[in-house]
Length: 316
Image 1 (spheres, rainbow, N blue to C red):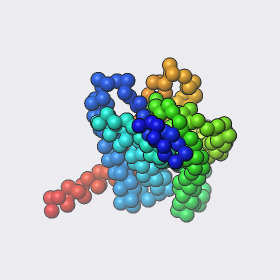
Image 2 (cartoon, helix red, strand yellow; image 1 turned 135 degrees about the vertical axis):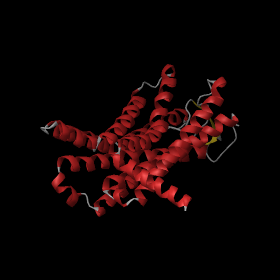
Image 3 (cartoon, helix red, strand yellow; image 1 turned 180 degrees about the vertical axis):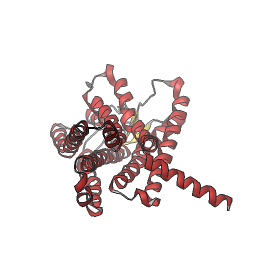
Image 4 (cartoon, one colour; image 1 turned 120 degrees about the vertical axis):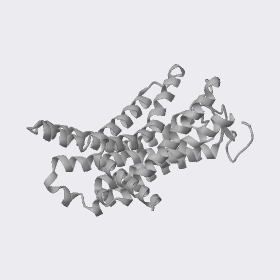
């Protein structure tokens, strides 16, 4: 399996160890991740449909939310179907090219999500800190440009990484102690000199991920500062309610992401790394529609109207 020739590579397949250290829990894990996947897909697709169908949600904030929900459906579909198949069949192998494709899609969507979260935080900054200029600044054309820019930045950032990885030689071992093809474990399995590539990828990450994070952080520092200066408690509560859902999502995403990449890369902490990776790759896409639908009055109203229309249609 591992020593057949493929192009300039000795290794033809990788073995994703995933959660193989819990053999007695494979069925339970399969059912758990299946439910998570179905709820994630259903919730995010529902938000996209509501944003498209309800004219009251045709605003920049919900346009960006629709983009984020669309991204989360792609994000989950990049990782979970492969994980579910391995849990169901016990086959944890993945081809080298398949692994690089998964890495490419994952990196593209990760960078895009950083961009979209930054754009959404900037939108909330304008709404809270510059309310009189919001309509003029955040118009439809500018919103579209920001969304397209987020998707393009993710594509550009990950294309370079995938091209580099496609030229790398793998000659064994072929075991990846993770549930998906992440960059760090792949580089560790390479027989090539990857120091220059690692440096270039690090610089690309700093260019495409650090600025969105700093923009998000700065936006919320300004938002919190503005809210604290509002004299009435009712005014503070109303202002905070416009961005609380997004702030929860941002905290979950960046919090677990930073923990994953700050954990020392040692065998003793590998299981902890996988647990936190589950949070930002699997649970955050699940939480997004739940947080926005449960905490957002306009989304709840749009959902109620949609359900009433469905019931009326069925009765008629």
